[in-house]
Amino acid sequence: MYSINSVLAIVIRPNLWSAAIGAVFAFARRSWWKRPPFLPFADSSVVDWRVTTAYGHRDMALATEDILSYLRWRRRNGPWS
Image 1 (cartoon, one colour):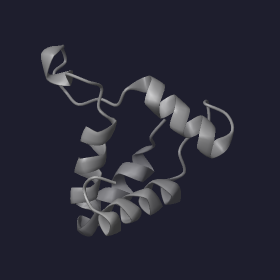
Image 2 (tube, rainbow, N blue to C red):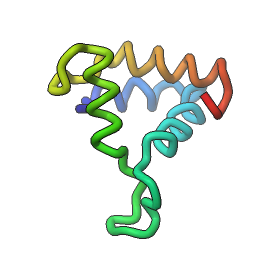
Image 3 (tube, rainbow, N blue to C red):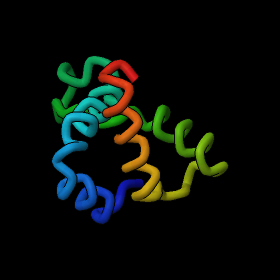
Image 4 (spheres, rainbow, N blue to C red):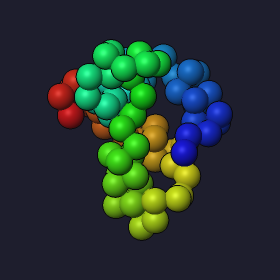
């Protein structure tokens, strides 16, 4: 779903780090801290729905520019976006 290029694109943009961290927790499954591996992984059903509504098919890979655009939008609109 995510490519190393997308991760690197975020790593080299420190101005998007806080938006990316916020997005990780926004997409995390409920009560992630109660179940192993105790990491805020995204809820797959939410990601599938988001990808399907954006690209028309759930098996599409997220485009790096789309991820960066979303993070810029989150940064502009605040943490509750």
